[in-house]
Length: 273
Ligand SMILES: [Mg+2]
Image: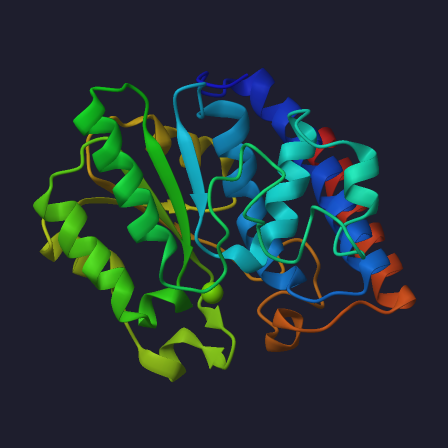
């Protein structure tokens, strides 16, 4: 489906696909007893939109918010790059699916990321390299919002704006939360989109859980382009949404079962609608 903007029928297919991915993501995190599920759930719709509707063979992607590796792995599973067996070993001993994207072992993952603030610089370097070599394709990068507390993000912004990297799109998973609290409480950067615009970067704001909105923004070949995606941490699981604890906590069996029920019910409602 890559490269094809979603019509009504495709959107319905996407909803089913995302529900399946979300259930598998919950299972992976429950079985491995690791945290970060909140930020993974806020990023999943963006990653699924990218991989199913936008990325082509000449494009590259960098996950700057490496702690959402689970959402990236499950997305790669839906496009056939990773297997069931791979996902079963998520975060396990000797696995190639570590808690943050690994340096080696998965060709689609170019950089080991997760030390926040570096992914956008890596993506900008890739974009400049493509231009210097006369290569086609585009580079995409997904950052978190808390990550913009890092000075290195702003250095990357200066660089990509100065170089006019028209083959680069970066997205912000704007869920309003980070490791130590809400982004407004820790170091307020509102309105982030206007700050990007002040650097001369074309910036669009979208609903980060609406596949159609995300895909419409991703279609643009203007650049450099920033997409600020309004998201909800823990999206789709009522007791996780906007709750700080789900930056860190693993799920108990009871919590896992409730999360599965809610995601399953939500899928039924979507189909009915
Ligand atoms: Mg955040």
